[in-house]
Amino acid sequence: MKTVKRTKAADKLRCRAEQQLTLNPTAADASRLDDEPMRLLHELQVHQVELEMQNSELLQTRDRLETALEKYTDLYDFAPVCYITLTHAGEISAVNLAGASLLGGVRCRLIGRKFGTFVAAADRTAFAVFLDTVLTGRIKESCELVLLNKRKQPVIVQIEAMATASGQEFRLALIDITGRKNLEAHLMQAEKMETVVLLAGGIARDINDILHVIVGYGACSEMNMTADDPLRVNLDQIIAAADRGANLTKSLLNFSRMQPVNPLPVDVNEIIRDVESFLSMVTGEGIHLEIACSEQRLEVTADRGQLEQVIISLATNARHAMPGGGRLSILIEAVDIDNGFIRLHGFGETGKYAMLSVTDNGTGMDREIARKIFEPFFTSDNGTGTGLGLSIAYSIIRQHNGHIDVDSEPGKGTTFRIYLPLTGTGFDPDEIIPGNARS
Image 1 (tube, rainbow, N blue to C red):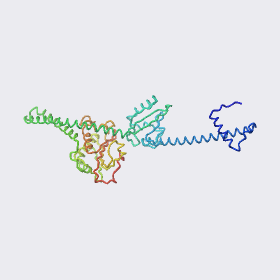
Image 2 (image 1 turned 135 degrees about the vertical axis):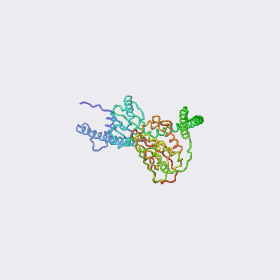
Image 3 (image 1 turned 135 degrees about the horizontal axis):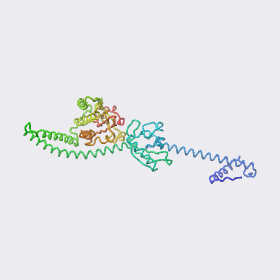
Image 4 (image 1 turned 180 degrees about the horizontal axis):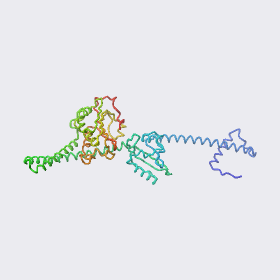
């Protein structure tokens, strides 16, 4: 008879089965094992006990595995980090709840979709190269890119990725860093503005003194000239250029002013109503102007003239973005900025604000231009503008303890949003819209 080699685990199981069998009064009598039928019966009884023990151990192991799986599922599903698994073809094969929320879809409907469809067009090529690097190096790699969720809102994410041992799947961990990036951008903008403001103020005063001398001597020279003097044309051009330079230095001095000139309680709605007719002149006949004021008084402490300057600057910027005509919408409403808004946008302090949004349906701009739009002397008007309008607007709003941001996309228009802190009077708290209700 061929003998079967037993393992130590099998021997231990046999020993335990033998011991348990001796406690069973109905078991075969071990003293009669020389009797072949009794020996076979005993063997069957031992095997039965072994099977029962193994079955019990399997059940316990299954329970432990189910418990571990449940814990893993809870950790996976409810983790604050977004986890996504991609196939070699770039399709989503698994995603946790945080990942589904980030992409803005129902988890079961995300399975099988190409992850690349959520990546911003400008980053898709770089992301494909990134996955190739991960697959080739077989080590953890990281990158930053912009995703577009279901509502087509840009979300900046940091991705840690690693390929599986088989190379057939990619494990991705995503962290939403939109708020952090926005905060960094605002801090960088504030530091840059502070430096430029000090520089602009000093330069503007020095240049202004020089221009006053040019204009003064030019005017004196012009007085001593005859009307038909051939040099009068040249002198007129010199004086006109000096006047334009004086206007530029005036803008620089306004830009460098650290406090509003005349801060008084004022209703934002009244400011818009007062400049409505002038805005129609600024935008021209080809642009349809829509204004929606709030039904409640939204009182802020501000310099009326400076806020009017900001509104006119934004309207002028919108006109340049709609050379063929279009629609300019101005909306005023009360909002409540909360911690969720601050985390998402990277700016603001909790409280109640008057929000003024200026929206056009013009050419729009890409992310790179939108990031630079408030920088001094930056212009996308092919050199026709000074590049100070929006930077001055930014400076004025910050001087009023407010905030301004821009949301734009090429071919889909632009929206500027201004947030000014309410003084605490003249508004109904029940009618205030949560700040995170709008992006």
